Amino acid sequence: MPPDNVNGSDNSLLYTLQLPSKMESITIVENFIDTIRDENNIPAEVYGNMLTCLNEVVINSIVHGNKQDDSKKVYINLEIVNKKSLQFTVMDEGSGFDYNNLPDPTAPENLENLTGRGIFIIKHLADQCIFNMTGNQVELHFKI
Image 1 (tube, rainbow, N blue to C red):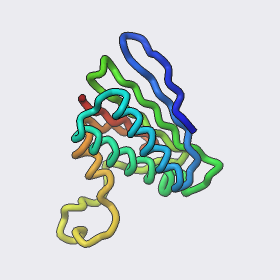
Image 2: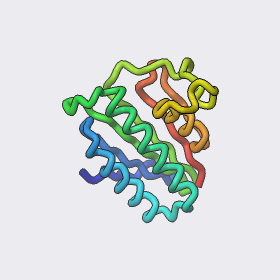
Image 3: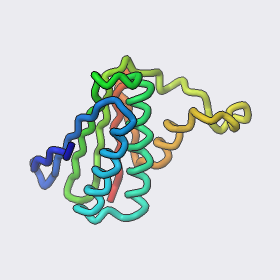
Image 4: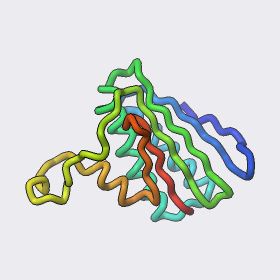
C-alpha cells in the first residue's frame, strides 16, 4: 500500500501509512523509507538510523502492541519540515507499556539476552524519542 502524500503548511510534507499487524508489513516500511530517502536526499547515516528505528518500532507495535492480530493496524505518520527535519509518529492499537521501567540492556545480567535492546537502540539513534503516556505511540525525530 503506497503512502498518502499531502502537502502540509509552511513547506512541510505529510505522509501516512496504515499497516496490518503482520510481519510482512516490514517490507512496506522499508520501501517507504527508501522512497523518503530518494525523494528528499537523506544522508546515508540518517537513512540508516531511520530504517533501524522504524523497523524496531513497527516490529514492536506488531508483536508486542497488537499481538500480531492482523485486524489491528499500525499507523505511521511522517512530517518533513523544510527539508531539515523528519518527525515520525508510530501508533498501535495495543494497551501500551511502561517505557520508564525497562530492564537496562547494558547491565551485566542482561548482556546475553536475545531481546530487550530495541528501545535502548531507538533512544540512541533518533535525535529525539517521545512516548505518549500510554506507551502505544512514539514520536521519532531526525535532523537532515
